[in-house]
Length: 105
Image (cartoon, rainbow, N blue to C red):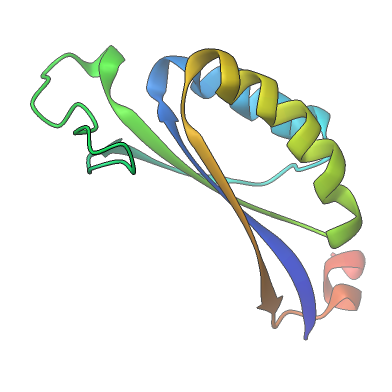
């Protein structure tokens, strides 16, 4: 087991390509995307849950990286979120798969 950084991003689906490109550029090559995310933000506004237009749907992006990779990730993602909206959370989690197993694949 080892510690990795978990990156959780909630943003408008129109910005998905920009965010995924930024993650890739920062060295984060794997991710999961959950579409049509609805909820209530910290500001108290609904996250477009009543809108039927696909281009206004929110997405949840989940990715993981090694702790030494997080600074470039944050530096690349922050300007996108500041310009287009969205939020990003970073936390420490334990990965149970061995680093050696990853390297041998």
